[in-house]
Structure formats: C-alpha cells, structure tokens
Length: 110
Length: 110
Length: 110
Length: 110
Image (cartoon, rainbow over all chains, first blue to last red; front, side):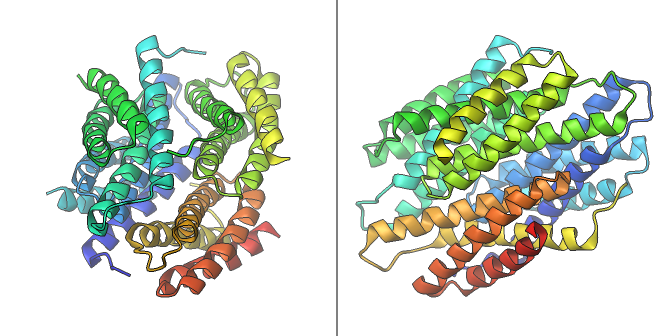
C-alpha cells in the first residue's frame, strides 16, 4: 500500500488527538460562570474545533490537495480554542492538544 | 428553541444533499477509462467533497462564525467536483448538487 | 447512476433531519434545572443521537448490508432521545424529528 | 477534567487507527480483479468500516452507555473487513488494524 509520508502521518495523529480531546472537554465541561452566553459559545467552539480536526485528518488521509485549506482553517480554530480554554482554566489537556495540532497543521498548510 | 434563519437552513439542506449525492456517486462509480490514476483522483475528490459538505453543514448548525471559512472551502471543492463529474459524464445529479451547494455556500461565505 | 430506492432515500432524509435537529437542540440548550448531572447527560445523549443519525444515513448511502444494524441502533437511541427531550420540555422539534427517524429506521432494520 | 479510564482510551485509539487505515486502504486500492462488483463491494465495506470506527470512538468519548452497541457493531464489521482484506491480499496493515480494533471493541461491548 502507498504509504503516507511521516510528516502527514504525524499531523493526522495530532488532529485525531485534538478531536478527541476537544470533544471530551466539551462533554464534561461544567461552567462555573454565570455568563451562560459565553459558556455556550465556548462549548460550540470546542465542538466545531473537534469537527474541523476530524475533517482535516480525513482530507490528509484522502491525500487531496485541498488538505492545505482544511489544515489552514484547522490551525486557526485550534488557536482560538486554545485561547478560550486557557482563559476558562482547568483545561490544560485541551490547550496543549490544540496548540500541538495548530503548529502541525500550520506547517502542512504552508 | 432559537431558530436558524431561512438562508442558513437552506444552505444546510443543500450541503447535506450534496454530501449524500457525492458519497453515493463515488460509491457506485464504475470507471470506464483505462486511466486508473485519474479515476482514483476523481473518487477521492468526491469523497473529500462529501466530507466537506457534511462539515460545512455542521458548522452552520453550530452557528460558529467560522462557518464562513468552511463555506468558502466547500464552495471551492464543490465547483471542482462539479467540473470533474461533468467531464466524466453520466453524473448529472452530482454536477447539479455540487453547483447548487457551491452557489449557496458562496453567499454564506461573503 | 444506480438509484437508491424511495424507502431508503426517505429514511436517509429523516436521519439527516434528525441529525441536524439534535445537534442544533444540544447547541442552543440552556438548562433550567439545577440538576447539572442530568442536564449534562441529556446533552451527551443528543450529541450521540446526532452522530448515530449521521452514520446511519452514511451506511444507507453506501448500501452496505450492515445498515440494518446501524438503523436498529439509530431507532433505539432516537426513541430514548425523544423521551428525554419530551421530559425536559420546549424541544418539540427534536421530539418530532427523533420519532420520525426512529419509525423509519425501525422499518429499515426489520 | 474527568478522565476516561485506560481501557476506554485504548479502545478509542484502536478505533481511530482502524478508521484512518481503512479509509487510506480504500483510497489507494487499485483492484486487480476483473470482478468489478466484488471490488466495489470491498471498497464500500472499507468505507463503512472506517465510518463505524469513527462513530464508535465518538460514542466512547461522549461516554454514553450506547457505546456498547456501537462497539458491538464495530467489532462485527471490522472482522468482516479484515477477512475481505486478507482474501484480496497486499493489505496487511488493514487486516491488523481491523483485528486489533475488533478485539478491543468486543471487550467493550461485553
């Protein structure tokens, strides 16, 4: 079978790890703020980030040239999600997974 | 429940229709060309287009502002898929679904 | 292109409508109960139901014989989701979409 | 953040590995048989297996009790996919990933 190159394989792995971490974090999130609008926006951001990571991995596995576009968007939403999770606090796993994914996807998009 | 506005609801419907049409067309495709590399690239394009449509719908349902980015990419890959399906021939359903989705997503991305 | 039969096409449509309705309902849900564990379980049920509907549609589009298994599970989780949404109240769209999907999937699974 | 237990985390990882391997194998598959109906059915089986693995992982991440049902179906389709890939030959990565996923999912479903 034609093999994926190691850089793409590494980026796929980071995307799938970020997908599962974001989905998990959104799922177990118990907002402590009374600002329910902000908490709700944060949950939707994590769910969107999870979906984008999954799709970005999908495009790399399919080896379509469009993976550069999905990786670019994935890097962007991951950085935004990392910032929101850092601000909320107690979500370091998600911050780390998002930043690792963003860095790898940025290189793929270049 | 907060309702989606009619334009977004219409775009979601077009994305999901295009998703199912592309996946279906890729699934039943029986290449008649001896150019297996081209046929394989076409199948991967249809599978990627199906995935992008699904994700674009997902982002609109979540009402994240990032849906403008996914709609922009969705419009682009749909136009490319429509052109490839038109060139191959016998795939008018997929051509039509891709173009309708591309037009709707372009408006959303603006 | 080989066409899907009308019953399968109808079930796919009901699954995709239920997917988008469940995801939407989970996204805009603002729990009024102080029972955060129950509210959280309900959100996770809606997200799982959305995912199952999407996969059930996917299997029917692919026309794999395994669609009977995914339709069976889809019907089951849809009924559970409908009951939870009815108990919570104010989610009639989701109750209706889940029941219509469950009925159609049950027939497919038979 | 509430942590997933190690057995579930391991099963999620095996599901996501099997997802990417099945999707990749289906994508690069160049049938050598003149039996196009059989080759087409095999591709659809790999695509369905990829989707089921993704959904099975999703259900475990969401920690919904329904994950037992999705794991059961995932184990079943993985074993069928492994057998088809072994018969075709030259797809040992996919055979191995499917069997590892099936074994792990079977334990989860019990």
